[in-house]
Image (cartoon, one colour):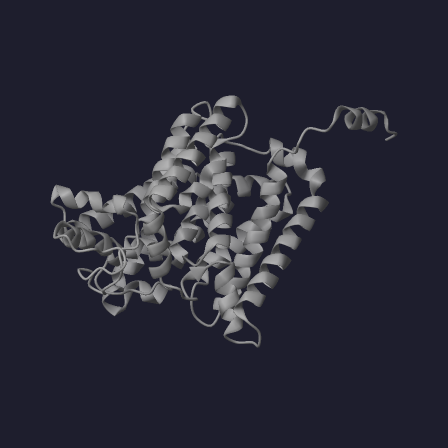
Length: 375
């Protein structure tokens, strides 16, 4: 990481990150500036959700209204650099706590993931998704005996940017307290979404839709529709149907691996980290267009994926490989390979989730019959 940032500094006057796959606009922390400039307009009574005239590029402040509360403390664009640095520091601190390598292979894979253009795109922009990563990571690291703490952090992140609700599975399903906490978070978020529904619809309408620097089933469908005959909806349905079919077939044919998957967890945060990272990727992949810096949440799933890959779980190795390709190929002539990797990653993660979730208990007479069956 130190070597990477030394290279960025050395190349700064000559385009810096643009030579390393990250588009480098001016000024730095451009997404942080979207938030701080919204504070200025909001303080003067100017609506910013659909269009933010205080933003240097005129972009809408497409965040929930909670992000406007610091305006009442007198904060403005002068807070951009400190806030951008704080977001990056919180992200890397959380990432280094979660991504603890166990050998040289881990070091290489984790370094490749952290230095990927998708991750550094978020760092350069100072995007608040990196702050949400730190919040969700803190929840993952909380002891499983404290599901209320985990649930509180997931709910906090979800209220700030909606999509972290897909990390609900990280709270846990084993034990009454965990199920109660997960249900309470789901209900509280549903109430919050109902109260802010008009803002959510506005955000959905103004969020930019593009192919480069984006991921999602809809993104690949848009790419195909622009280059081949056929409508966008047809490609979206075909892609989703084919990818889900591959995932379900893979899970069914790998049912014999369930015991190995259930027992392969080296550290207490690996399993909740997997359900948080995989849940956010699967949910956002299905929901809409997403900018690639949101792929940072895949880092939460990496420790468990590496443990499963070491145990011979092929889908985990596929997920790690496809994830790295998706993190690196976010633009340029090889973009289509990145889009394919997104689909493969989606199928692998869905299959692993199906295998990692405990199956329903067999009915007594079925279990009894299986116990007397010949070997």
